[in-house]
Amino acid sequence: MLFVVTYASRMPADASSNALVRLIHGFQEQFEALFREVAKFGAVGLVALVVDIGLFNLLRFAGGQGPMFDRPISAKIVSVAVATVVAYFGNRYWTFRHRGRTHMSRELVMFFLLNGVGMLISVSCLYLSHYVLGLTSALADNLSANVIGLGLGTLFRFWSYRKWVFPAVPDNPADQELAERDASTLI
Image (tube, one colour):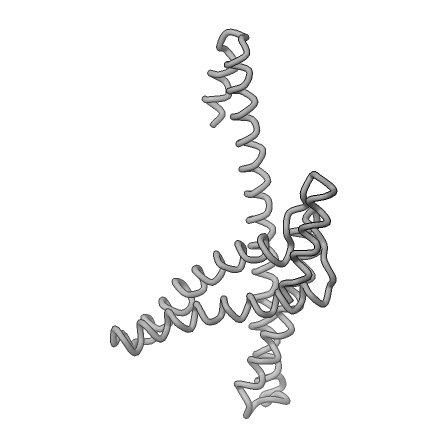
């Protein structure tokens, strides 16, 4: 990209070359903004993952037998719920802070709903691998659920958060009102 901008800046200063430089610069700015969002989204996701794993193990095994030692599903539900709340606030106030805001209750409902879809993507990959393809080893289960499924679910979450939970702010005030009205009708 730098080569193209450098090369384009050496072109004769007519209107078409200036337009090309502006176009390339615009693409570069959009790419850099997207890259920053992706990096922040990943950092928030890692914090939420640490909260999820840490709280799950704390609930299950703290002091030898934690408060939910004999209830692993309950411990996982609690740890995922807390990690999802951590991820919401990290994404709302850091990753997507520059994007549109709607009512917090609407955002939270959409956030939890879209996280549920992301989880279904991961579980579907595991189901397909384990039960349809017959790949039942621990490695196959982990690859299908925690690499492929988690990767696809994460791509879906990033896209859906940008589209529905933390939408872009339109430049035109009339478009802003329309976007807020449309967003409020989703839930």
